[in-house]
Length: 197
Image (cartoon, rainbow, N blue to C red; front, top):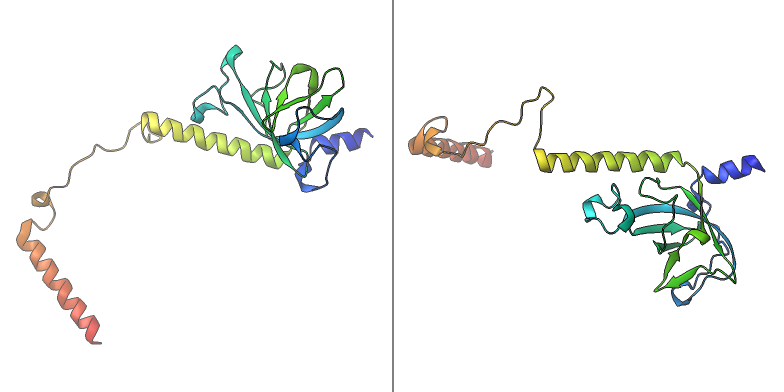
């Protein structure tokens, strides 16, 4: 049994494509029917942050996490409605959650979004290597892109890119208008010669 649990935690459950007991008519519900539901995080972001920082930084106690979730066959969205201590943008895709809904403490739904609270979410962890590698690579690319935007391209020896020099036709090789006209004449002759063959 332990090996089965480890396998499920470390596997992308979307590849099974099996329907779970999670209700398909989520947008029309106000509460999820009582039960326990095994789901996987596909993306998590703090939507109080500017979009370029949503997956990297949390707004501290004022954060509002949005989670893209999957039960293996369908996708849905959850919003951190009450603070959940183990959740954060540090969780990679593939992390598993156990969602619990009971008669006395139901998992509520608003506009098709699960309203996640501490009493109804248990982080089971898990590590799907392929998803983690892709996630880390995309974070690395985004960090470099952000660095490039703020500091410009830096060379490894510490020197930056050469300074920008505006084009000046008078300083161009071959010198001036006369040389340019001669080049055009040569290109026309070459084009005519190629066209006649």
